[in-house]
Length: 129
Image (tube, rainbow, N blue to C red; front, side, top):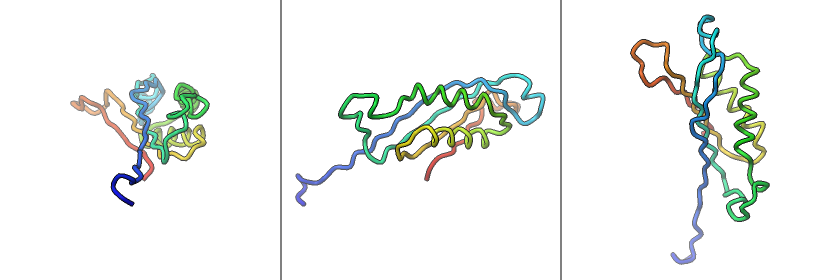
């Protein structure tokens, strides 16, 4: 193939940034007595561009507002103590909601941290390889 006829590879990724969740969360029992704010970042990497790139139709992709609502509903029903477990739970919720093949990345940031002088919280990542 000549250089002018090379097929280009397009990568597409959707990032959902800073979804705020107020949940009962934490290792010690007294930490779980009040809701805590965590921030959730999600990345979805598509093996091929969603058809919505061409059609401009929501039916040809998935609705991230519905995904956010489902995560919020499901997480309110669960009891998590560790960011690692929370990330795992959210990853599996996303896997169940999105039927298309995508690589999923979940980042959970908890702050303020209960660790003295840790100003910017702690983030745990759980993602497809």
